[in-house]
Image 1 (cartoon, rainbow, N blue to C red):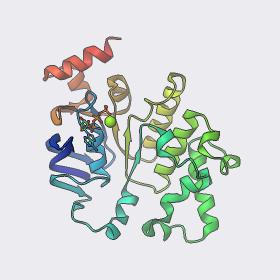
Image 2: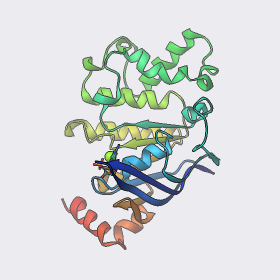
Image 3: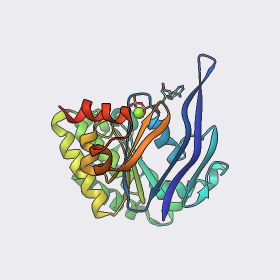
Image 4: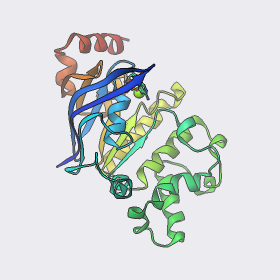
Length: 257
Ligand SMILES: Nc1ncnc2c1ncn2[C@@H]1O[C@H](COP(=O)(O)OP(=O)(O)OP(=O)(O)O)[C@@H](O)[C@H]1O
Ligand SMILES: [Mg+2]
């Protein structure tokens, strides 16, 4: 079953009054339970692809389908189901977590969407759900009233993960989830991410410039360069027999360290 699909997706930004094509004719689909890495250099269009999948931005051309339904022309009030089907963990928890909100509200916020509010009818159960989500990422209930600045970087990203998981999505999109973190906590956060994905049988789209991380967490990989998919296949296949010179370059740059 296909969870999310980009069909001939294009994104054109305007830069200094000029159109700039950030994604061209991208076809990409994620199936239930599948773990896919998106790799590519800086500015190649990875974050733009991720944002399209979550309906956070619209394509300039082409289509985005979630559970087989096009979301491109869907009015805002009918987008609620997106909240329950896919979540995103952003690169930098310092900017993705509202500094003026306590953890209880940050993590509980997705439950306010009408689709999810039905699941958690009583407000007492909301706190319970928040505590459970925080617990699953190793953060105790005594921390629920803290603000993001009262946490370490690794804890902040774990809070972002709890917020992404509380809606019980079938797809998690993680955009460079550890690159803003201290090297010493990266492995811990990645291992936690891997464990959650496994336990919940989640599909994962992992944006990374680090092929070693993709090899560790994903079974399939898509290589993007200058807004286009230049190669894709199983991780083993692509890493052992890269077809595109750009992929070979990426492998040399990251795996030879
Ligand atoms: N809002 C925007 N307005 C104009 N140009 C943009 C905008 N967002 C992204 N771009 C440009 O589009 C291209 C793709 O950006 P994107 O953020 O998707 O790349 P990326 O692969 O995620 O890069 P990085 O690895 O540095 O995060 C880049 O050249 C970027 O400068
Ligand atoms: Mg990016």
